Length: 182
Image (cartoon, rainbow, N blue to C red; front, side, top):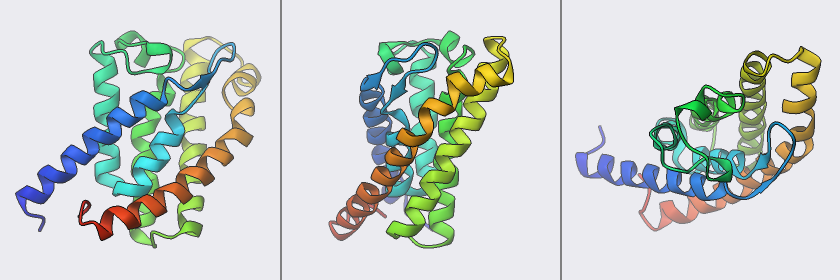
């Protein structure tokens, strides 16, 4: 069982990754309904470095900070209205994606191949969940939801998944060797 000091350290690390996600959210390419942002890169990086439970905790904290009004979402947006709005499904999906990515890596191995696979699965999960909410909240047809919420993100999503996997594995190895991760 993890000592309370180790748990506190990992909770602080989770908070740092939530802050990194807020920063990465501001790096974006605007599109009509859903912008391409650095958030999904941050989600994959977070889960690859700190695993399922603390990765999900970081994304819960990120979503909660935005929901209570801190401008951490893309374009410095905030509020519960964003969570229940057209792009809110993507934000909520970050929690699930981080958990899934970390879970896959914890059950297999933290290596480049598994991290790439896990991050691609996480990216697909985010696209599916985000697009479902986009379709219903924006009252779009499935085709229009896919055109706005999936197709523009596939290639860049795979690129971000590979980058977050590679950088995440390297960062994890360094942080473990420096005894900064449990």
